[in-house]
Length: 151
Length: 241
Image 1: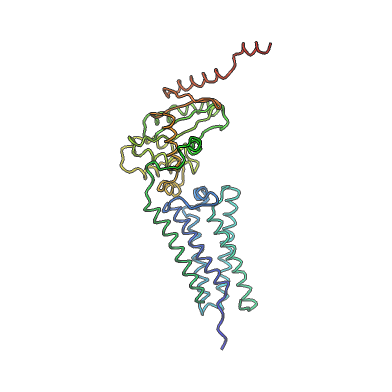
Image 2: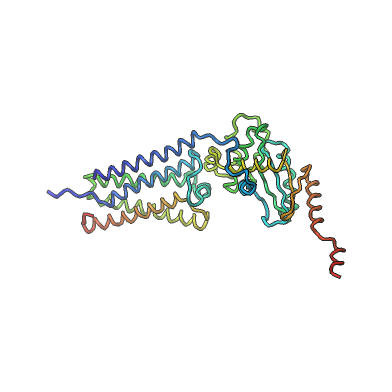
């Protein structure tokens, strides 16, 4: 009989940050749908970014894709914290896969803000930072399972 | 592990409260339709810096054509749709003059004019001010008699090329109410009594208020201003000899 495993810190970090990111994306989506007043935007020009053609992919707001991505990361990380999923390599694989796509998407959006729209949205920047930390945590999680460490 | 779920719960509660409040206040919040109190407008310097107009053309152009306008005034519609294009063609495009638009919503007789002025500024946030102005004036007879016009303004903004969500969010708030209120106060301080009022100035010289706003009057006023600012050739020659 093996000793009970300590809950992986990396997955907890991913879960918490995904939840934070989910609310950031929900706020952006609500604003995009005209459900809020003007954006709270201490730094940058959020309205310019939100009104640009790059804030939509076809009929879908980019923020809706963010909501979907964060929900997926949150669901997988929470599943990976349940007793049945603690040793799961599939969970770690999915976290790396989802966060890689999210990171690539964030890099593309940050490029658009810097060089195409030429305006910054603080919420988009916060989301990009969250995604970067989530990606690093997902990579550390894969390494943890490979080396068998408890961290 | 329990600590982790506590952290998750705190994040969830804060997130739901924040997003919920934003949506709640945005949905229930009423669009500002009347002037607001703006501190410091008794000071002329503050008033001038707050009462920003919207400029078309070269900001360094020597001549400034300023218009004080109300979106519910039929004369303003006629000016924007038929006179302004001629001004653009003859003076703005060539860089001889710039056009500066100021809001002067006559709220006592035009109940939607303050909201319309804010709507124009919301369109300006997206770089669609002049396009929106054309659409709203073209449709003036359609909305001026209505009780509620927010939906119409959103449709006009979309027609003008603005993004609906951002425009709607701006319109449903009190955004730009301070600037429009300052514009209104500036017009009052200048003693402007009606709309449209057109004023023409050269450089930092005194602005001249025109008594009529047809293109011929504006053209004549500009030519007079140019002639007055150019030293007579004979005098120049005499001074040089």
